[in-house]
Structures are given as C-alpha cells and as structure tokens.
Image (cartoon, rainbow, N blue to C red):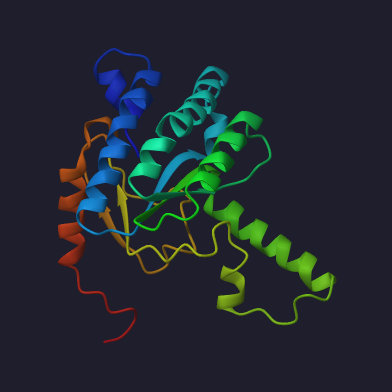
Amino acid sequence: MDGNGRWAKQRDLPRTAGHTEGESSLFDVVEGAIEIGVKAVSAYAFSTENWSRSPAEVKFLMGFNRDVIRRRRDEMHELGVRVRWAGRRPRLWGSVVKELQVAEELTRDNDVLTLTMCVNYGGRAELADAADRMVADARAGRLKRVDERTFAKYLYVPELPDADMVWRTSGEQRLSNYMLWQAAYSEMVFTDVLWPDVDRRDLWRAITTYAERDRRYGSA
C-alpha cells in the first residue's frame, strides 16, 4: 500500500490525508479479491522501519490502524473474512494490539478470505523472531532438528501460504523488507498508480499480469 504521502503532496494536503484516503482502497481491493476467488491478501500497514517517521505521523498511524480495524471488523466478518495479524508486539500501542486481537477472535472461523494485517512488521524481524523462538525451544529440549517446514512453523502466521504475487503500487520496485520468507518464489507486479487511487480493477489488472507469467520454480 504505497504512495499515500505522494498522493497527498500532489494535492497540497498533509501526508495523513493520503493514509485516510487509502482505507477505502484497501477494502475495495479485499472485496475485489473475494469476487474473483482469491483466498489470501496481506497488507503492509505499518513496517518496523516506519518508526523513523515523524512522531506526529507515527502517532497518527497508530491511532488510524487501531480505528480502521475497529471500524471495519464487523464488515469483514459479514463478508466471511478472517483477520490475522503479523508483526511485533513491542512498541505497538496496547489499544492497537487489543483491536487486532478482538478482530482475530471475532473472525477466527471465517474462511472466505484471510486478510493478514502486517502492523509493526518487517521481514527480517520475522525471521529473527522465528530463530529466537526456535533457540528457546531447542534449549528446552522441544526442538531437535530444523528444516524449512519446521522453520515456517515459527513465523508470525504459520498457516499463511507462500505469496503467489507481491503487488506494489506507486511505481516503486522493491520488496522493502516485506515477507522475505513467503515471497521467495512470488511473482512481482509493480504498478504506477498511487495507493489512494487504487480500486479492485487495479488488483484485477495486476492478477492478469501475474497470470501471464510462466512460473517454473527453478525447473527448465
């Protein structure tokens, strides 16, 4: 979900206006994903690097993420969406953690689509945290051997499937520390549209681009 700040700047608005406008884009994309049968969507809502932004913007984003989750959870529940949270608890506002947990509990039995909200998330942080938990289990005698399948069980959302496609808006062409494990064989699709201007049709165009790719997973 990239380009909120640039969208606001183009309109001589505060950066926060871009974040506010981007809320409707996210949930239109979720509804569009449901329409065409996508089973899992993950949204990069707040990264571990975003703490370096101005204190005012960080404060806004904490409250905004909290309020969006509270405001949209019943709607997601009615659509059959299961909400999951991926990210680190330290530094997050307690109210943000609470709303994420309430949404997870409310929607836990839904199976139309899983929406993973990545809040205080970083790909390297996720791998480091997984390794830390594995070391603790090994020292306690609960872990004897590590392979890829075992490692994946220690990720923030172990049941989350590998990402078929990573879609980034705003013209930027990099992962920015996002789902480094899950995106190992993802197709990358980059579009120039800024996130607040996105709707489900942009998702469908990205999926069309993805569908035209030849995925070989290392084979000839």
